[in-house]
Amino acid sequence: MSPGAAFGSAKRWKPAYFRELIANLLERGYGVYVLGAKDDLAVVQEVLEPLEENSLLHNLCGKTSIPELIDTIAALDLFICNDSGPMHIAAALNIPIIALFGPTDPRETGPWQYKKATLLSKAMPCSPCKQRTCPLKHDNHACMTRLLPSSVLKAVDEVLA
Image (cartoon, rainbow, N blue to C red; front, side, top):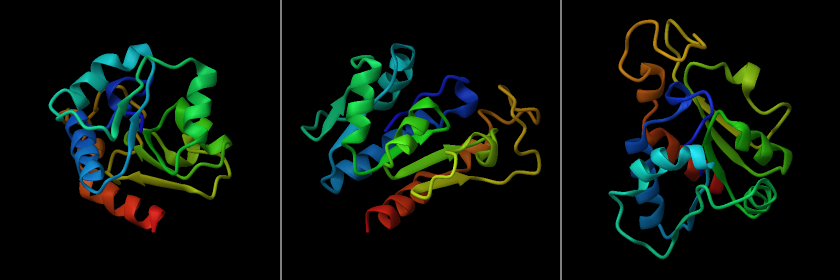
């Protein structure tokens, strides 16, 4: 999975939600690889720091070149990410994706003509606002905070079934 996004916190699912999702996946015995650029290190640290060490959890954030990132994504059974560049890499590689969208429009920035993508978002009266800060002054974009880990975990179950 990749908890980062170049547009900033507006396009990032809450670190606590990623943490909860990772904990659930680890409990189920799944291997989890956390990917990201050096710019994502702080976010990934926030996601992973509270988690206990686990041999199934691999932090590759800031440790891969672009070709290594592509090779890593190509080996995955499922890629969970925000609306981001790595999402498009996974789509190009035909890897199943669960992509999380908040203030952006999955029809505009989602994977182009890709059938293995599950695009999750919470419809809000203001969405898609495409803003870095919430125009309704919601703390951390309600469109992202209302997209709960249980919904993503349900999508994981459906994709991996």
